[in-house]
Image (tube, rainbow, N blue to C red; front, side, top):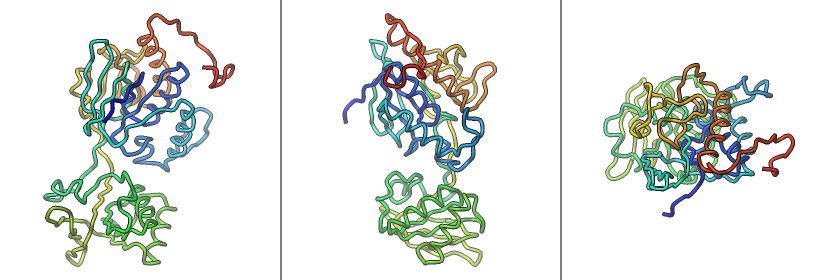
Length: 335
């Protein structure tokens, strides 16, 4: 596995991390983003993609997923690179002042600067309280869908009642997967349009729906073979190649807590002037940082990203004069 080299490593591919690419790109700095989630967007994509957002300047209302799409289009000209589905586990400062960051799957990224834009921290899946579930993790039990084709034509049990459970039920059913959707209630929390699509699949026999039920046991030898579902009438055994429990995510600071940064509870203390931490070359922006007067708003994170990139440029190029320009005058190509 080769080493990724970049100017700025952005830890977190949520809205603030994505916008950082734009501001860095204006200053001719390259960015690589790493995120534990299998797709960009952070909370906006994973937890509430259809949630309306009202405080983005110039947008009276925008859906969370549309904001992520727009941010991606905005940064495409700067050609960022990504490592998704991997936790930034360890950092070390090299002799020349740059950083080497290692992911839990072995990815190595060398950067001049690190910008931590981890939102509320590393998201860890909320696991159902099933004895022995860890034994089949990666062997039939997945908490994220990284590659939908992996489940093509397979027997898949999905548990959950939110947008993620509904959306993956729809998408995997379209691939020919034999889907059983298990939900502990009879009503769903997801978008009404998604609920309607699932119910249509159920009515056509393309999805098996079991409500007022929970998966209470997993069975197999080397890999998952079946799950036990508790229903009002008792327990039933369902053969399964995969079990995907989608009960949301729990934010935790994760490995970041061991990096020697100044912390206040689960937030990283920064200088509000430029969002620098107590470690030279490491910055923290967005919901993961704290300072007097801090407001946990996306638009505030955008501002912090802008100020941080100016400081990052001065850190990387101390001998170069930073000339501020307006994009309305130069356009993107002018930078």
